[in-house]
Image 1 (cartoon, helix red, strand yellow):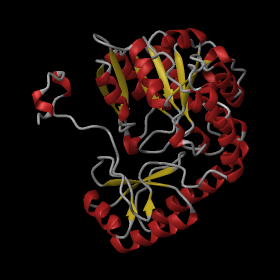
Image 2 (spheres, one colour; image 1 turned 180 degrees about the vertical axis):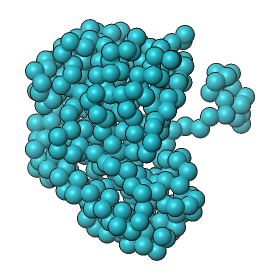
Image 3 (cartoon, rainbow, N blue to C red; image 1 turned 90 degrees about the vertical axis):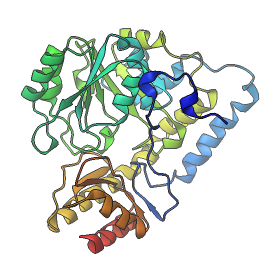
Length: 357
């Protein structure tokens, strides 16, 4: 039986490991920023009916442009967006991959301010786009001056800005986005996967879209909507951007079942998004409690919290796991990330932390 080394794989892929977080069967899983609350029964019934209605015509291809779903998403986002300004795919990862296929590629570069979402450099690698890891400032912050200096230095074809940022959790000052737009020679992608959890007063990059044809805002239904298993991400941008990604999308990339389920979820968004305030309350509780215990904690506008453990994070990670609590080691020495889940999950995490501090 041959191994990977026996295959004529691309040289830049040799020795790499696939992306993924540990999927372990433990009582408290707080490592992948899922919504811990189950889908409400009325929404389950609505999605079931919507999917069932598609079954008899599975012999036919789905709407390859997902026009009805895109119209629903545009209406949800507001800001005067139209169906021509919205595009959907299998998760925001596929959305961002399509953007790099269209605007990155061989001989081009993408820049992100690390630590940030670990899939961005992998997406760059997969599309043969050179990745530029720019730096953040004190306490993982990013000022307009710091961002502008690095964009000017590297002149990337694509800039990734995460707001709120993963893994730190903090939303960007709108001035940073505006400043980067002023100097970036190519596309500026603002990843707003956690936007629904942002603290009051946080301004979405959607408000900046008018007049900025090279700005793209990406979103997902995996987090606030609790639709991670449905795999639905989307973008909002100038209509020309949507036309560009349609050049690289696979034909019929969104199944009829995915489109039906997502439309039903968007139609019942009030029920699904009803858990957001409860999750935010648990997030703020985690931040406050860990700070009271003397730990450094990053400000969070997301459904997770990045906290310093005061030593080797792998030791603390294993100690928590031994008590049935799974959190995420994001590769930052001395720091771990925990998802804000239910009140009972927060109880379990904070109780476990007492024994390892």
